Image 1 (cartoon, rainbow, N blue to C red):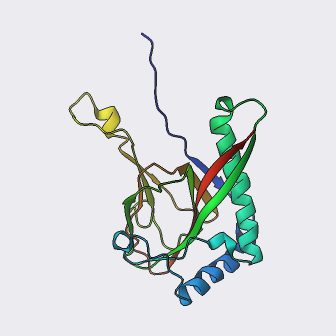
Image 2: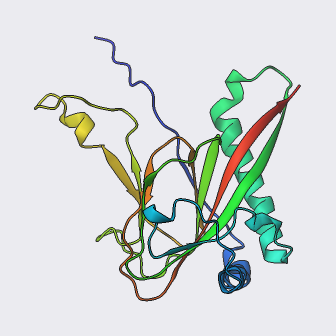
Length: 208
């Protein structure tokens, strides 16, 4: 009997070794944008208790922002190459564009309901300061949902229902890279100190 495990979804997790060096400055940029009321104004009904900046975070001139942007571009590039190399024309060049970028600051009780990121290839979530997030209670964790829709369930489908979703533990300095079409959510945050996250949507161009 030949077994095929089909349609796996790649997801990457990487730690930024310069996190501690830049964390405070990056948080200060988030606070500055929040105080300036720089809001995205997008789908606010599915993210109560969450401050979301405009979608141009990486255009901020601060040195920490620019260092983080460069690292994210390089890291996403590595993930894209790992996933796509055998599908590309031989000798082509690749450019990664962070075409949307923003910060989230989540207060007690805040959450971001289930959603996708349209018009992008890859997205990232960076845990700048997870605050009091807790993987054991799912407080402040990001949950990723199985894209396979099962229309019927019984004892023979438990292998599928057992992996209907996956929670990622928020760890300071960690970057999660995932396909933008994967449904995901930020579960209700029950901590008392704010939770800081940076995110980007990425497009990839093949330059022949």
